[in-house]
Length: 75
Length: 170
Length: 384
Image (cartoon, rainbow over all chains, first blue to last red; front, side, top):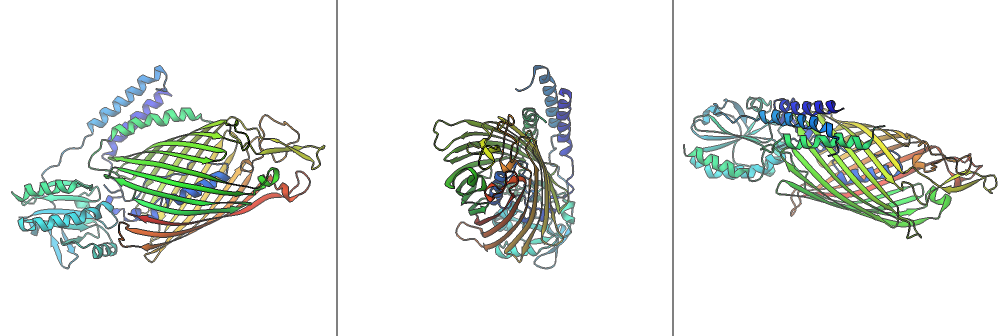
């Protein structure tokens, strides 16, 4: 377990070196569709939060409903 | 922390190795390379090529109508263009959208006076290895790339002004 | 069953690595947009009507920090099947406010938030912290989150009744851009609760030949701990014309032996320049907690007893529809954009082993319970 943790940290560190050289296969100037609000995970945050609450209150399951990322990738 | 004594050393070893590797991956500085030439359709009609602008300080700004920071900086770029044009500075806006309908709509509402070129096939974007939106490349009078800016945050325009002032004096 | 505490250690161990390895530079993530949303929500179904406002304001400062504040209310009017079985209809209001902040440094977003929820017999305080990191040319986003809740359960008519529950959530999220048109996401969340986890008003029933109805009630008894794991994958795909399809699947399991599957598909369709429509279908299915029964064979049948329909075996089908109109496209004072939005969700719940006692019938043979709920939302969104 300890060696697995150290290995994971080392892999993540190696990944950090590699990531600075990975060429994104979707270029920053090709993200017009991803920047469109219809492709956003959270277009209406208040509405999403409310429906999430309605479901959690009536169902036994909970969690794993959030998402962050995508979008225009600007800056 | 929450770890037992024995596992603390392997955790630390992994972290130190990671930090050393990351430190070794620091990006290099920018080199003074000649700016690759290109010819693109001008939104106002005709074509424009970079080679024809030799002798002037040129700022090539890659932008798109869907990019928030791009829209934010354009009025400021327009001001810079108007102020330094008499001193031999020119600004060229390269729009990267394959379909320029949205860009046209945006420019109708917020026009700029500097030339807008259309890079519909993204040939110039890949030629200049555009790695962020927006990106600005400042080329000196001899046609060499002197400064590259990735992204835009309010306040960056001061850096642009300083760099243009330096290059315009050459 | 993975212990939530050991998950925490593993997830938290990644935090200093993520935070330290990517120094702040010219590249930076963009803050969420400034906006204000004013919403009125209404839930009506199963004898329960809950409605109220939800108001959100989000504002960024110095291109680095974005703060949001939300006020939310539930005005409850309840004559639900549980209430009609053992109590009488009631009305009450739950008030909730939250505040959150996001701080951007390079490709990392740090978020903190706090929520307080207050109703006559339950108060909940929640605090959360999360870190989000953009990687690999901004195609990947990893998010780690931690949430802590402190709740106090009350009971009308008994001011000395104030047991507590504590909640801890650990979450891990991944968002990955696959092509110009496709983005996928995956998330995992472990939640653990401790304390007084049941409802002080709810009862279970057991077979009782001495009673007129054939059954009698006793208070429900829940375990004092509850740990759950949920894992979900989702995807959004931009069609060749301006529209998107999306889907999601979630698997849930917990220490009470509840297993649940959730699946959703949807279609987002903008029309002309100003309109946006969305339709979606959601399916939910769960199997019961191991200490649940609609009718126990005798009193004190087991250490833990529950008759909460939320812990029964049931499934639900829901359809959601949304229409949005951008009524303000030009700048108006400090407002850049404004839209009016209407959502309507119809949810049908069908219980496989929870019976409708008020409907009548021999004990254990009453009709299985089912109901349909209409959930409507009307709101205005402004961007500035």
